[in-house]
Structure formats: structure tokens, C-alpha cells
Image (cartoon, rainbow, N blue to C red):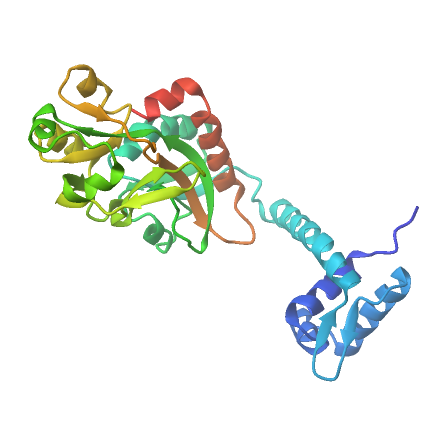
Length: 309
């Protein structure tokens, strides 16, 4: 059966909806207002339903118009993206790709992975910087930023793709526990010496997973602040304070008795890795390919063990 819809009338209808009037839509489309009005009227006639309520001051979607817009908009975006990729060479896996990964953890997790990606796609010019700026890096014309966060992720104007959870645990040296006692409630950490961050994780409070799947926060007594998991681990072994560390990273210290793992009624919130990119209409295929490559690689259990170390 032949459809009563055509792409031109649908594009005009979407423009009127998003611009809020026939006049503004005609300016955006660079066509006469009479053409816009006639196209929408013909679309309504073909569908035998009113899509837009017209007044002298504004236009408002009817329930039928809202349904049509909701269904058609993503289809037009997908079609336009396909057209852009086919006509602009975006399907070719070549050209510059600039990203930022966290220093310290980033090279451990992504060093080998990015090298494999570079070997697989030799025509992509990969540039990678390491720092903790994350979101700020995207303002410097980067294509992708890998960030580490814990608990609730801060709202931002970027698209975030979850990559990996890294289990964590609270630890302390036997000497520190002998001096301050073994805490049994997370609230006790507010009064105990703790090792926290300066700017990493936005200097956020410690977070624990509650029974509802949400997060409980504890503003700990941060007497020693570092932006390095390795420095935090060494300080914990030295007895400077209690610390939250990657479970994998401190496994040997726990096994050797240099650190003691402390359990509470609520588990420590894991570190989470996200890939962030700008909310652009068309994501270049090379960027999308890298994100999918990372996600597939990190879904490998053997690779996850290496990444969490």
C-alpha cells in the first residue's frame, strides 16, 4: 500500500514544530511561508487529521501532531546522518581522532587497547593526551574524553557511554587500625583520618551503595589528599589514613598483611569509566568505531581483570 507521507512534507512539518511558527520555519528552510503552510495543509488532508492548531500568534501541536513528530523526528535524523556519511566520506575510517584518558589509570587500562586500535585502523591519526581534566578537555576540540567517576555522575552537556565498573574497597594498615580501632559503620569515617583526592572525582565525598541501589555519601576527614591511586595506596600502607582503593590494585598488599580490608553493611561504590563526547548531530564513524572497540574489548573478562589492576 502506498504511503500518504513524503519526506519533503515531513521535513517541513518537523521544522514548523521545532521553530514554533510557519514564518520561522520558512526562514529556516529558505522557502516562502505560503509553501510551508500549503505543505502542512496537504499533509493534514492526506492523513485526514489536524496536526497543528493555528492562531494568529503561534502554532500548537494537536495530540495527533505530537504523535507524528515523536515518530518521524528520529527517522529523519537517522536518514540525514546516513546521507551525510555517504556524501561526506565519514564512512571512511581515516582522519584525525583526538582523545583524552585519565593519567595513571588510563595508560594501564587503555595503553594496549589503543595500540591495537591503531594497528587495526592505520589510516586513523590517533592523538591521545593523559590528564584528569576530562570534561574540560572536550572544550579543546577533542573528539572523546574518558573519565573516571564514582557514584552519581555529575550532569553535563555531553553524551556519556558507560564503559566499565571497577570494584573498590576501604583499606587501612594494621598499625592505623591498632591506633584508631576498626570502624564498623561508614559514619565513623567522618572522625577518622582518611586519604582523599584533591581534584580527581571532583573531590567528591566517599560513596557507598545502599540497599535501594542508590548511594549514601560520607564526608570523611581528609587529612591527606592526592590525585593518584598509587600514592593513596602507599600512604595507606604507611598508616597515614583509611583509603578507598581499587580492589584489584591492593589485592597483593591485603594478601601480604600490609593492608586490611574493611567491610561495612554497605559496599563501597565502584569507580566507573565513561566515554564522553559532544552532543553533535553526526558522530564521525571513526569516533563511534573507537567507542565500540573499547566497549567490546572491556567486555572481555580477561581484559577486565587486567584493566582493574
